[in-house]
Image (cartoon, rainbow, N blue to C red):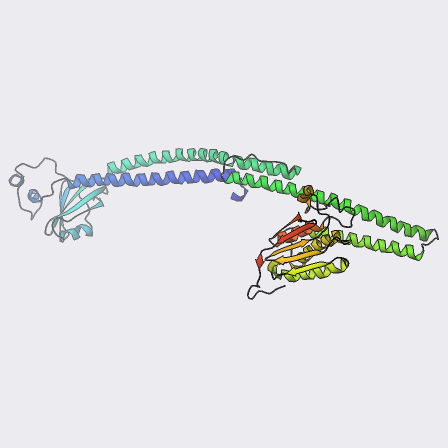
Length: 463
């Protein structure tokens, strides 16, 4: 049943129940405190009376004395409710209120003189009284009692008063709980409305006003940050689709043109000569390879941050050496100078190797036609790749790692503009950083810094 209630009703019930419980506990404690105080007053009144037994002589057998001789005055016409208890269990009642004797009273007759005890007792007629039993001489104890009728009447009146206060407290607690729940949950209500609005309209530009620094405010800040991140992700996805469509349109158009040419030549009965046909087929193959590379790059970039192979310890110097071996056949006329020091990192070996290959491909692409050698250095965890090409205009450097971005000097060369974006993602996944800058004397210098160690961790397998 509670699972079907709203949060506001549950909070109201909790507040009302907590306040009601507190009032009830206070009322019960108050009743017991007043009861104890009233009983103490009765006991003080009993303890304040004279407890000698000499004046009882004329009334109880075996007790000597005459009231005139002992007290110097005659007894009052009305005797107090007192009775004597003897060690053998007998009793002598003075007055008209005999009280039932208990074993505890008899035990006091055997104790030292002056011993006393208070208890609730019952008269022979069934009336509840407060009894004080006191040993006044060996084998004799005095029991004096006082009716508790007034005490019970006072406690009953107090109980009704406290019950009324508790009832009013319940109503007040329910009202306070409703007010507290409305006030406390008002920001939650605004947040709920905003979430429902976003779910209904998919408007990620919705923002929640944030007031204060409490948990509700932090929840609002988190929601605003989430919608901002989702809006950014949607925009990046839209741009990726648009850019991918633009990049795929050119090779697809070229492929369709070449395929149409082949079909037309066959359908018209005028087949192409062997040499032009070989060039056309080679062109088709190159375009297919370009499209395959582009699709692979898109798949690589579309993975989220946690969609990668488990990181293991990788000998980064071996990764760079393998990338250099792959890059040499692609640029037989370009010299690649290599100087590698040992460095072990945690990462994905395949992703890191592809990143280094992309850096080398860019370097050899701009170092063609005798522009100069490509220098590859790995020292203390920093990999540098330098070419001697035309460099990158300073105003374009902030955009070099954007997807599909291409420098104005590279737009006539093959490529999709995704290579450096893949480099940035692979390095970032490994916990490092990468940047490009124009080198002194011309060319571009790429720096990759990865956290690691020059020695392999003991007992750790190396990929």
